[in-house]
Image 1: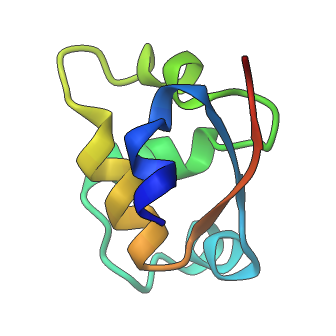
Image 2: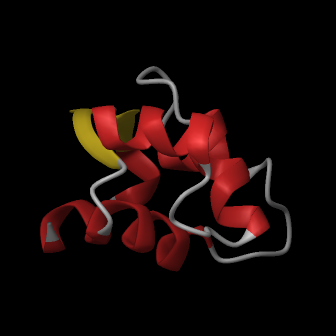
Length: 79
């Protein structure tokens, strides 16, 4: 997981089944911006592409939170 965090901007993430469940049930009590990021994770856009949707905020801790909660997983790297 540390390697993914070091390269958040070039990593593509997808929702896990737990992440999909969180979208529907809101059981984890995610902060609004973290939840927004989870909703936007689609398995196609990189961390850099998703960061534009939370301007003025550091997305690394948000991605770290979602990874630690197992709501997302890395699926690819963009060059």
